[in-house]
Image 1 (cartoon, rainbow, N blue to C red):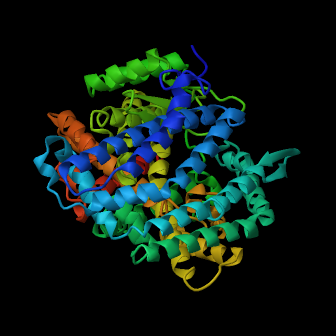
Image 2: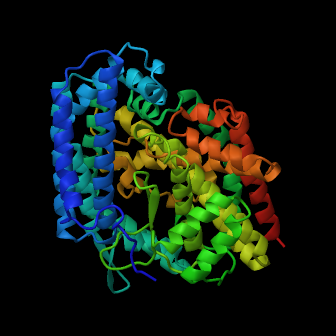
Image 3: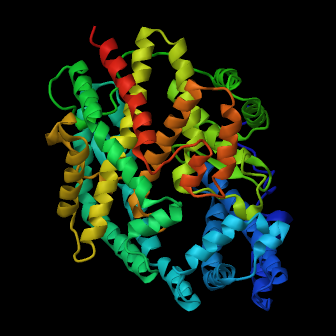
Amino acid sequence: MEQQYSLVEIYPSYDSDEFQNDFKKIDTLLLDFEKLNLEDNIECVKKVIKILEEVNTTIYRVFSFIELNQAINTTDEKTTYYSNNLSAKLSNYAKTFTKMDNFLGGITVDITKDDYLKEYEYFFKTKKDALKHILPEDIEEVIAKMKLSSSNAWEFMFNFLTSKASIEFNGEEKTLSEIRNLAYSPDANVRKEAFYKELKLYDSIKDSIAFSLNNIKQEVNTTSKMRGFESALEESLHNARLKEETLKALWSSIEDYLPHFRRFFKHKAKLLGYEGGLKFYDLFASIGESDRTFTVEEAQEFLLKHFATFSDDMVKMVKGAFDNNYVDYFPKKGKVGGAFCSNLPFIKQSRVMMNFDGSLSSVLTLAHELGHAYHGLHVENHLPLNWDYSMPVAETASIFNENLIMSASLKEANEKEKITLMESQISDCAQITVDIYSRFLFEKEVFERKLDHFMMSEELEEIMRNAQKQTYGDGLDEETYHPFMWACKPHYYSAGFSYYNYPYSFGGLFSRGLYAIYRENPNGFVEKYQELLRATTINTCEDVAKVMDIDLTKKDFWLKSLESIKVQIDEFIELTSK
């Protein structure tokens, strides 16, 4: 088996004529656009669209090649060189892209009279909606260039400090990520000691990170107001194609079910040998026993077997990914942690990067990432400017796959394994509901306070504790709330993706709700599900859900999804109370 995924289908190498020509082609295409005499007629609009299609596809291809190389070898000098050069190149054309957006958003000609342009009806609608939030070209260019030494630099400082920070633990120097990973240790003393070491580690970096957070949020507050948004949240929802009404229904539903999660936390504490709220450092403690392990070949066979019960095109796609070396499985020096899937619609493929360790968790991770690939399969035949889906629906197919495989695993498990699997799944659900809600409340409060003052670390710690109290409540031991969750989560430090939290709650509960519908009535579901996935790039989140006759602005759907978790909590407590 190959040790890394194949990228030659994108480009043979950085030195190849194909890569070098495309890297230069970006400039050529954008200069071609600048030469156009822009007129409000079908012929001119089609010319602009054709150029934009080619520009976006070329950038997408170049960026994907760089990103996929960087993920498996962060120290590669050529990758770093081209990554920096691409960022600089694109910032130089901020004015050109703004000019394109202004033109496409401002046209009055009826594009529906042209069959080709009619395919882009939703695309043109979003451009028109965005027009009132686009600043003059010169200002957009200045903002893009200033970001390189402002929010981008603050984000880089956060990443640098958190990646370099370390502390002594049991005679060894541990990085922040290493010390945080000990939260999964089977040894209770290790989990506890690692937690307090982690809190101590932040002392050396918390003030610098507080400066990063304050300045990034200040920049977003400023640019959001300049663009005519009431708040950073309004801008985030606009970009996510999600109504505030839907978000309120989601949070209100989660609030209704917080008591059930708190009941689960307190029961887990009892299983670990103490009364009251669960200690924060025991959130990820495993309950029960499961010594089942998989080789990569066994994982592949397991997934293909269970995907076959769902759909033929899923099996065909997954088998193709396995046979053609589209998955980079194993950890190695220089490879990033975690996992992701990169859709490559320009070659009708995807690539998956992960760090396979033989556990069932790794198998579920592989299923999750292949869900993203399946999503890509059902949007790759759209026209190039209709390839992108918004953040809230991005996790739809991935978490659906997890539910599919977890359900199969539970059916095959003995009672001890079932307890372990159920606890793991409920804990995952608690993360995307209870914990994510606390992170949302924290970020909202930070944005609001940043309007009138600077927040030092102590104030940020207080805001985080209050957010955790609102969500975890007495389900956690208040003395062990984690006041530095803002200092270890990179999601807070991207000026381009504010509120990178609610999409996880949306995606997790949306997928779980879809899976509940599938379990209730599988007949005809797959075809509707495929239609829903295709709709994600050319509709709002609310209109996507209507494919399944779901109204996201009402609590009914969200409550049904949460009820399925409550049922699992009840079953888990009953199983472990014997």
